[in-house]
Image (cartoon, rainbow, N blue to C red):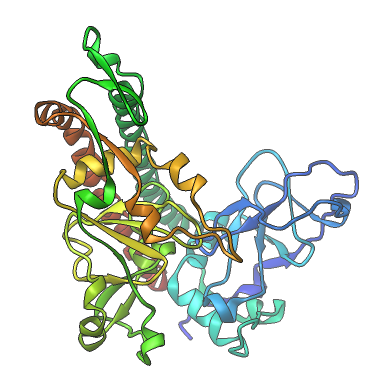
Length: 399
């Protein structure tokens, strides 16, 4: 152990504040990304007075399922208004905040090495959890307080930059939606243009509907390698799962699995190429992303559809999805089972409203710069996350 490392238990202690006066009914869980989120638990009829009341500056963690997720969901609560968390969670505070800064400690909790150490402490079962004593035995460096503040400020600066880029992308997506709505729903851009009847209602003269499947070279999905007797690998070909596609249409590459070249050859039907659109069809439905060269080589499983267009530009179809053209159609045609899913046939049957070639060119002149801006920001955000990870890695050298 390095000389400036100390057991975590020297600096934290459990606290147990309950919602006995029912101050709030806002129930939160913790994601594996170590962020508070609305709880997915059904709490209807539950006595919320038993839940733990968490306020600004306190930590909470879910000690269960570390063996399954290989991560410890743990987070620092930073909001001014209190919320409640499960009675099963550990809730704790820093004993002396003049010695250990809470944001510095949260940075340590974000390190992959911390999660790995927590995982090693479990019994390896799916439900393997971690005990409070195990958590307290974990060692961390505690440099001088001023040094902690310097590190925290560097991390904050990167975090602010990421937030700014994400906000810009949110605004770009809203602009794409607005342009799409004006063109394809309201026809505002076509005052004075004759509207003619189609099978789906009035459309500008010269426009037509085409099924998505007829506009594509390929609409397919993948297979889980283990069904073929193949295992995932630590490195190799990227293997995209539904959870690695973000709600903002970017990829979370830290959640990519990997396969070797031999497995990729067996699964060559579901190889992914630049400008493919990947679209989740099982689990959380309807998340999508446009593939760029940074993702390649890649493959995927049966929860993700690959849409490869040939008769319209991939970016054009991508803008339709950002404009939520597909939402109602796919919602009406979702197959309800133990887990809802979309069939490839349903994906192909989506009617696409197409302008004439001149109209398509004009529309793409409007949205292409917006899409390029989003993609460039995704790359910049990824670079910033890498900088954060480098900063977290250097914490082990803190003195």
